[in-house]
Amino acid sequence: MAAALRALLALLGVSVQVCSLQVSVPEPRTVALLFQPVLLRCHFQVSSPGGPAPIVTWKYKSFCPDTWAGAAPGSTWGDSPGEAAGACPDSARTVRIVATKQGEQVTLGDFYLGRAVTIRGGAELSLGPAAWGDSGLYLCTVTSTSDLQGNNEAVAELVVLGSLPEGSRLLPEGTLPDWLFVVLVALGAGLVALGAGLCCLPGRQSGDVGRSLRPLPPPSSSQSSQVPLLRDSDSTGEMGD
Image 1 (tube, rainbow, N blue to C red):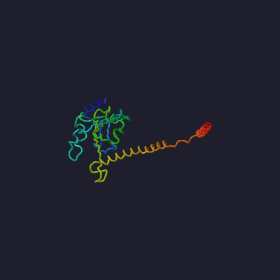
Image 2 (image 1 turned 30 degrees about the vertical axis):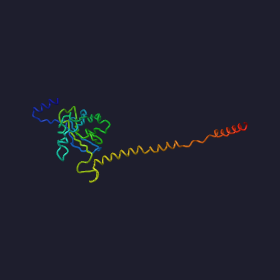
Image 3 (image 1 turned 90 degrees about the horizontal axis):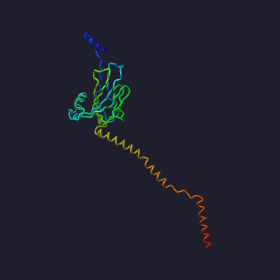
Image 4 (image 1 turned 60 degrees about the vertical axis):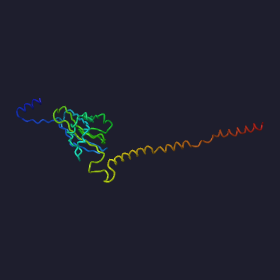
């Protein structure tokens, strides 16, 4: 019925503005430090908000093998995220599902099970603390049964660094490099945890030694009274002999 009405209006020369699905990423590129919480935003608009809940899917694609080799000097990226998503076939890189959401139900991909990954709000992907393998392209896809036309996909790019971007540092100039500082902090945390686990071992060992060196209990009164009796009988036997 709606299609026939649009065709009739078109024949009459009346322009009809048809609302379609629109998906966008407000921040196409994100740079995050290692272990820093990451949130990738994705916005979408459907023509029938009261219809069935759309399906939101976040997919991960690793960078093409020659991404960094083709970058210009002094720059990190050569192409836009959308161009980088199609720069090489999926067979040349890693592709996996991060999470899907329909209504309030969120399902994680197998690779992300056990991590603090979820889809918040409408379509915002929260990766939790960033890991080394999180760098890559993230495709936000929205599928709506009431919107068969429009742009249903947008691409966000994430780069995880072991140090701050150029121009800013964790430590003053002339001290340790930022990446070495991060490594030392991680090693220090591991040593503290190891020391906390070993702190009680000397106490347990000394307690065992103390129990092994505990003096024997004194003989009972019945045992002490039997010894003189045995001696008296022996002496009487000797006198009789």
